Length: 73
Image (cartoon, rainbow, N blue to C red; front, side):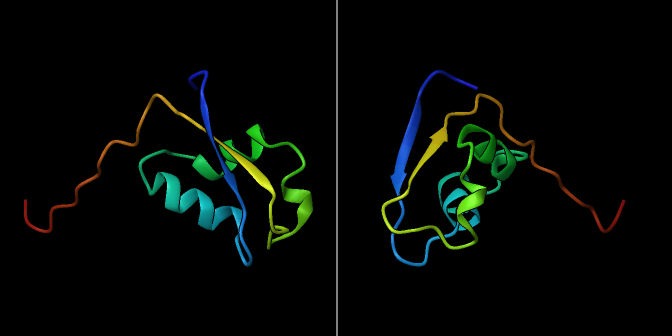
């Protein structure tokens, strides 16, 4: 994990998993869990975050390698 992070202020109806998906997509393995680790106590706020909750979104150095599936070998 790098030294910098983006921050996000939650809006009405935001959930952590939705915020993580919008920010990282599927490029980072374990992004959801890693964001929760970087934001201790965030999970205690419930599934829908209170408006204005600050969520730190760390910059991760490694990305998920693309998997490909071949139907014909």
